[in-house]
Length: 101
Image (cartoon, rainbow, N blue to C red):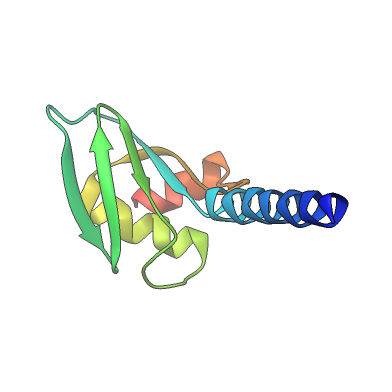
């Protein structure tokens, strides 16, 4: 019985770790060309962005769209962006340039 309980607890912990990793993979991060003077929050396409200094972070909510389009729409509100990523996927220098145009 103890073995079954230990297995169930271990499975629950492992499942929670996988769920946490999946959510973290969907975090979107933008690095601004010019830092903000003070912490601010803005909504772009349903995504709540929190910006501090040159870093803006958003969770996995909002409209699902291609990363380059999402970057361009964020740049219109947040200002020029020098780096942009969602999870493990980051835009290239050329994509960032297009994002700011």
